[in-house]
Image 1 (tube, rainbow, N blue to C red):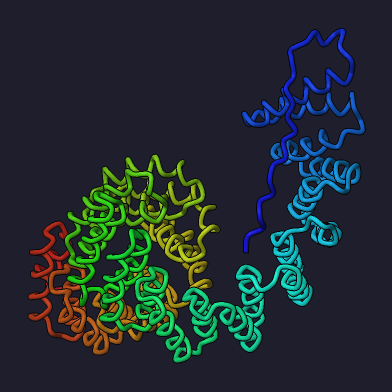
Image 2 (cartoon, rainbow, N blue to C red; image 1 turned 180 degrees about the vertical axis):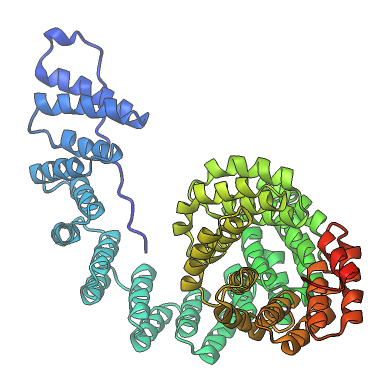
Length: 561
C-alpha cells in the first residue's frame, strides 16, 4: 500500500514590485515569499530556501513560511531541518490540516513513525478528517508492525464512512499478510453483500481464495463474476491470468481473444504473453496462438514496442536469432528500453558473435546503468572470445563491485575471472577465485571441471581433482568435456583401463572432432599397449590441428615421452 502524497499548500498573493529599502517588514516578507514560491515551482530550491529564511526572520510567527521551508528543505535533502520547520508550522497552528499532514509526512520520511502516529491520531479526532487519513494512519501502524491497531483504525474509519472498497481492501491485505483466511474472507463477503451484482467485488472474493490456495472456491467465484458480466475487461483479464497459471492454455487463449476484442489493453496482453514465452518448451507448442495474439496487439497499437518484443521472443524460440535481433532493436532504441531488454539484446548479439556491436553498446551502457553487473560481464566474455584475455580480465576486475547488486550473477562472474586469471598465467589467483565460487555454489560444474583439469595438468592434488570431476560426470553424464576431464585425471593416476572407458564415452558422445580429446585417447591407448590404435587417434588429432607438432613426434617415435 502506498502512503498518499500530501498536497502542496501554496499561499499566494499578488505582490507589486516595490522599493524594499523603504518598505515595512511585512511588505518585504510578502515580496520575498512571492519570489520564494516562484523559485520553488521552478525547482530552484536553494534560492527558495534563502528567500524563505528571510521571510521567517522578518515575521517569526507566520507558520506558512515554516511550512514552505519544510518542503524546500526536504527537496534539498536537509531532512532534520524539514522536520523542525514542519513542527514549527504545525504547533503554530494545530488547526491547519495541511500543516498537520506535512508534519506527519516529514516525521514518517525521517523514520519517526510513532510521533507521526500520535499527530495523525489527533488529526482523526478533528472534524475535517478524511477516509484517506484513516488509510494513511493504517499504513503507519503497518510500518511499525502493529497490525491490531491498523485493523482498529480501519474499523473506526468504516464506522464513520460506512463499508468502503478502500477500507475493505486494506483490511483484506492485512489479514492476508497475517495468513488469517477466515477474517479476510469475511471482509470480502461483507463488501460483496453491499452490491451483489458488482463483478469487481466478486473478483475480490476470487483473489482472497486464490491467495490462500482454495483453487476450487476461487474458480467458482471467477465463474460467478464472469456470469455477471461477460464483457468486463477486468473479469476477462483475471480469467486469462487464472487459466495461464493453471496451465489450461486453450482456455487462456479463449479469454485472451475475448479480452483483446473488448479492450485496448496492449500492455496487459503483452505481460501475459511474455509470461508464457518465458517457458520456451510450452510456448513452442502454442506459437501460432501466441503469434495471433501478438498480431492483434499490433492492430490495437500499430508499430508498438509490445508487439516488437513479443515477435523477438517468438523468433528466439524458433531459433531465428537474426530476426529476433531485428525485432528487439526496435525496442532497445525506444523510450521503452530498460536494463532487462538491453541484456536480452546483448545476449542475442553474443549468439551471433557480433562483438564489435557489443563493445560499442556496452561502452555506453556502463554509464547508463552504473549498478548493472551483467553489462561488464558480457563485455568481458565478448573480449575473451575475441582473444583479448587481458582486457577481458581488466573489465571484470574494474566492475567487480557491481556483483553485490545481483547475487545470482556472482558465481558465473567469479568463474569467468578464474578462467581469465588462468589464461593470463596467474594460476594462484585462478585457484583462489575458483575456491571462492565453490564456497558460494559447490555444484558449479564448469568451475569444478576446469579446476580439476588444471590441477591434473600440474599433477597436483589429483585425488581432490578426481572428486571434483566426478561431481560433474554424475551431474551431467552426457557432457563429453566432463567425461574427458574425468578420464584424463584417471590417466594421471595411472588408472588406464578406467580412463579408456570415460574418454571413449567422450568421443562417442561428440568429441570425435576435438583434437585434445582424441590425443588424450591415443595416450591412454598407448599406455594400454594398443600402440597401433593410439597412432590412429593421434593422426586424427593432428589432422584437426596441424599445429600440435608434438603429436607428430609421438607418431614418429611411437612414444609419448
